[in-house]
Structures are given as structure tokens and as C-alpha cells.
Amino acid sequence: MSETLSMRQSTGLWRRYLELCKPKVVALILFTAVVGMLLSTPGVVPLDRFFIGGLGIALAAASGAAINHWFDQRIDAVMERTQGRPLPQGEIAPRQALAFAIGLGALSMVLLVVWVNALTAILSFFSIIGYAVVYTVYLKRRTPHNIVLGGIAGAAPPVLGWAAITGEVNVEAFLLFLIIFTWTPPHFWALAIRRRDDYARAGLPMLPVTHGIAFTKLNVLIYTLMLLAVTLLPFAVKMSGLIYLAAALVLGVGFILQAWALYRSDGDELAMKTFGYSIFYLSALFAALLLDHYMQVLLNVA
Image 1 (cartoon, rainbow, N blue to C red):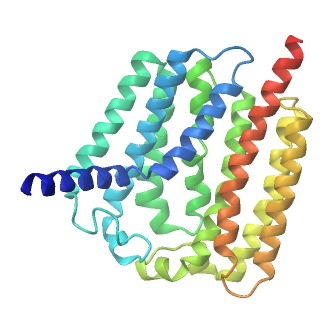
Image 2 (image 1 turned 90 degrees about the vertical axis):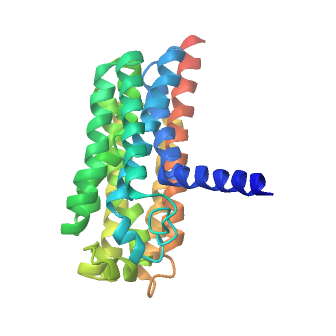
């Protein structure tokens, strides 16, 4: 009986450590990094760099997420959305969480330096610092523009993937970065509208708290318009073709219509619907980039 209880506790503890890594966020980061890898070359991607690079980037993202948990444990205890996290619940000691985060980060650096390249390791390291320290410790607590500036770190994964395969960063990689950078504010502000009271209770200067819901809705709409323009750049520089162009237009107009509905609505009833669409939007857009890329490869071979 005691052995069964011990096994259940061990399984539960393993899941709580996994929760420190924010697996859903890391999955989206890894997806965009993999897209960057696959788009970086018209040929076959080297499997060693593909798998080890992907693992190293994912571990770096997980490290940043765990450090974010450690820094935000007091804020998380106040906010309804985050009260159930492992540190506020006392299920993992802060010192153990920090050691876990540092261990993940160190392992990611070893993998990237030894088996991928130094550029990817350096960029991944600065991404960890940018998200876990600059955004979490400074920007998040001091300015309503936190998510705009902090989005620099969040937009890095496709650049990391590109660098992992090619050992360099070019204009095409920067365009992938620019798409995610422009996507991040309307994505996050939609959630912030819904969780405005949570952020106010925690004393965080999120845009809906400092400038109100109506102003935030307007900014969501403005950024979706900017995003549509930015997503046309890959086609403009001949990085992608008509398949991607059609997807970018359809998905972009859909995002604008969703943002317009949010802007015109009363209260926050459409905020989570907009947030959900933003996740679908980015996944579908990057999938369209991949589809277009390989269709062009096949046409060139034929």
C-alpha cells in the first residue's frame, strides 16, 4: 500500500516538474523553431542538427519557463489563473525549481555548443535571459509595453532553428522573427483583457490595467492590421509563393475580423475566442509556409 502511494506521489511530482516547463508554450516554440529549420534549406535537413538542435532549443525554452515560475511565485500565488502552479502550492521547493531550471539551461547549452553550433547556443542563451530575466523581472513589472518589448525573446525560435541548420541568420530568418514579434501583442493582450482583474490584483501594469479594456481592444485591432502587412513580406521577397500568400490573406483577414468583433463588443466576452484564434492563426500560418516551401522544392525538382 505504501509503495503504491509512493509511486503515485513520484508520478505526481514528475508532472509538476513538467508543469514548470510550460509544455504547451514549449511545444509552440519548438514548432516554430522546426519550421525555421525546414525553411532554411531546399535540401534535406541534417538529422543530427535537426533532432539535437530541436532538443537543445526546447530545453532552453523550458529553462526560461521554469526560471519564470521561480521569479513569479509570489505573483502567481495572487492570481487566480496561476494559483495552482507547483511553487504557489508548495509542491516543489523554490531552491529545487531554480536548480532544475539551471540544469535544463546548462544541458541545452552543452547540446547546442557541442553538437550544433555556437551561434545557436549564444542566441538561445540570450533568449533565456531576455524572457526569464529582462521580461519577467523588469518589463513585466514596470511598463504596459512589457509584452511588446518582451516579444523579442518570444519571437526568436524560428531564428534559432534557422541558425541551427545553416550556422547563420539572414533576411528570411528575420522575417519569421518579425511575424511572431508582431503576432505576440494581439495574442497576449486578448488574454490580458480576460485576466485584467488578476493582473490588477497582482499589481502588474498590463495594458488593460493601465489604459483600460477599450484602448487595449483598439491596439489588438491595430496590431492585427500590421500583422497582415508583415505576413505578406515573405511573398514580396520571393521567400514563398501563392500557397502561402493565399493562406496569409485568409488567416490575416480572419484575425482582423475577430479583432474587430472584439473591439465592437461590450466587455471581455470575446477575448478568449480571440486568444484561441491567435494560436490557431500562428500554427496554420507556419504550416502554410512549410507546405508552400516543399511544393516549390518539388516543382523545382520536376
